Image (cartoon, rainbow, N blue to C red; front, top):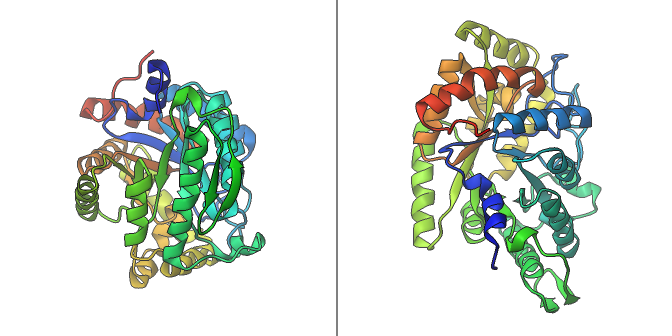
Length: 377
């Protein structure tokens, strides 16, 4: 597709000069990514989400990434049980911000591609090119049962996802109507206007971890979302992804997830993790997550490793831990960047309460380390 220069520049806000893109993860869900019983855990009200987006936008945070969740996990807190649907949530946040890229997380088997294409174009115009799509091809059997949808066999999910995004891309690109006669969709006379903002398409991300999932991401997406268990593992994972992308003639970025507990001293940070994750973890929810991870990640983590990471799941859904002083957090983020990651989406126990300290103390250190640009006025 052809795009005017202004539209392309806006779309490419995620391709700015920040060596490591920073995003906030899962603020659309109650408790965010911390399966904890502490009273200060995240209240995912619309007021709090809108305020967080405005504060993050003003601070130069690059993106917001939601979790597509339809029901909570078993446990005392109903972990992630109160959530906003991600496309409508993205529309609201895009309308309330100026620079932030906001992703929608969409379960392809649950949303018809014609409907999804129109939804996302609407969000894209509200944000003037700042909408992104995170495709999920399958995951939570309990949620799929709510829709009366049986999940396909693992590899077939990505075949369906491929046909889904192919159909959406045609809707976004073609002016003439067309038919779809595929394995999963049989559609007649398809067309839709308007097209995505400025003649470009939204950025696309996928977190598939199996061989089939990674191949889908390389084929269809701009960004892969990869787990980070250690810097050494992440460095090798990125090298492998880059080699695969080069062989496929693609230029692709890799994102990961983490959680932040930033305090003036290391002891304060570690004590808080011990309190909210170890002492006050919602263990029924955590064990459900571990069981699901063992069943569905397909190569992301083996069951024994998942069992050994229960506290990390309570602390931040299994993400990369960044716990300590501002100097330590900045150094950890510098390692993530040096490993080759394009960006990291991270969470706090309470985003609004904790982000300002991160903004004031960690972001300037990242500028001094050369992995972030000074915030333009």
